Image 1: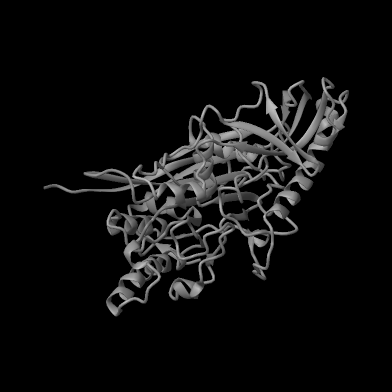
Image 2 (image 1 turned 180 degrees about the vertical axis):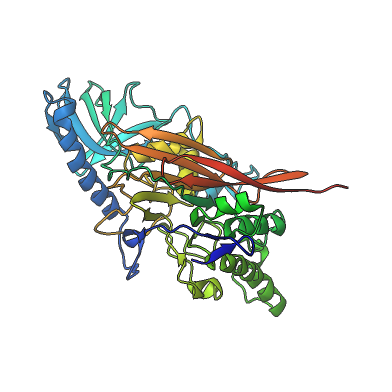
Length: 448
């Protein structure tokens, strides 16, 4: 890496970090849409998760028999493993939307579709059964979650749930010993370059801080400890009116490419000094369905000339000095927020970790590629850091597993949507030695 010059007599050298990219399972090598059914990804998910849950049953309730839905017997307690389906009264339906456009009643689009009348159904290859009781809350679980249930069939034909077995945190590689020298990873999301709400000066301040061109000797010394930058989605904003599927006029073509050129200039400044990973987001020029494939490198002719620049998938997984990072650009958590309830976004993030699945609502309400033989969203190895981009605010939590796992959950805020008069845009900085994190704020104040 380049040395960062402070004065004519003293140089600071940026610290190094061993990097391993682990995005292979999210990469689609030969994309095909030839009649694949989404049921196949559910079968693959159930097969993998059922094997896991069966292995946990002997330590959970060894005295109970394990059976399928078809083998349930009235008033006989047992354990059954299957995939949850949530029947939702307010869940949008294509046919309903079509019919409502023919009426004078406007279509209501609530932020959250949870209703008191929602109920859960458990299904496996043999059949399905409606669940009853107060143990399994429909407000917490979503369609696609695989669980083990202890209960019995009632006279009404329902399955009365008495207890729930979740997969819990997956096995975790041992966290390296604390390093005596501080090393930091910087996360940022929701840049939305090209948006009227983004002040370019604030982004330039961020770049200057990361690259060591901002502040005094102390500030530059801190900047030298930053070993990696992750940009978690929604990096550009293109005017919606231009994306109508029609041929663009010459002046509109320049408006379409200008935000990408501006982003490339800023990324080039970062890549010239340290490694940077960029992930696609919901509004970026990438495929819509998860896993989103890397943004085409031809969009970034300046930054892609550096081997420190990496265009990555969403979700994104990598190791830094044997510390495992796993994260998304936020679509999985935003979808959970529509179809279930929690006190904050960190609860949603923690649930996906304990369910061992990054996107349980895919493909039901969250678009994903129709995989036929695997489910790439299963969390087979527990990360040390689990980050989610494009959230409403910064938040963090340390989660501990039953086998000693420790995971730092990070909710990364949108960079361009904070404040009016005095605008503060936080980024997240993580210490590799102890998994602690804090925010850095970049703001400008305008006077009338």
